Image 1: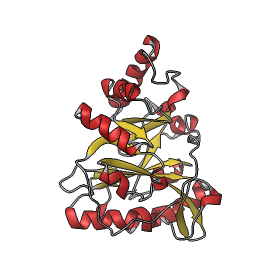
Image 2: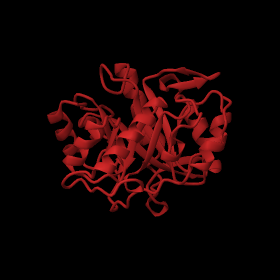
Image 3: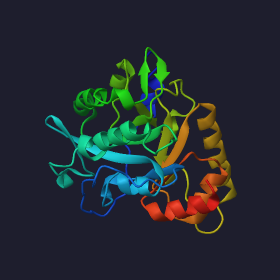
Image 4: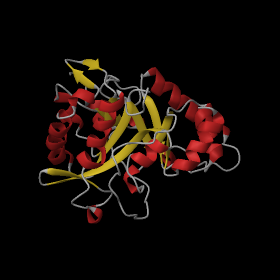
Length: 278
């Protein structure tokens, strides 16, 4: 996979996630999800904080979840911060294995689709140290993943996107590549193929001051429209994190065709999207 990395590196900064109060993590239950009708735009931010990681999101119809990881020796642990690391909570046990069980049972994470189901993996430990083990781990699940091989996209029922400490150079050299890169607003208009960088994500307040209460300022609405237009022209999906949990803001994101709506409030966003018939 050959293309210029200069625009990627110049626009790259570590993702600064909004602070989330600590909550206990619990492994999934019986390995079977009571999936609701899927909602293609719904993204479970810091999904592992919910009582049943992955399965709570699926029960609300979410089609995308986020797992933060640390490499600890030869294992990938799911946690938001290093003090929260629990030896029993791994990327395999909380996400990759139960997702595979669902795909084997139904042909997709949500019975009947849609595909792909999105798993964002946010690397919290050092990128160069973590990537070799993460790449090796993902290779064990190649049968269910969307893969880039010889520059061509081979679509599977699950698509992985790497965020946080992104090993961009190492990923650009990988073939096959089992994941895409989560870009930033600074990457808009660069020459990275959508197969390599399928998403653009950034902090809402990096461009907008509107908190979802009252009317969005006209200049900010125009800027949002411009950002969405460029992302879609590039063939990429768009997401903002740290968006206020306000229905008026969610509605504005829908009105501007933002592809992915980020939330910690699973029930609230589900109710909103079903009422909006999205």
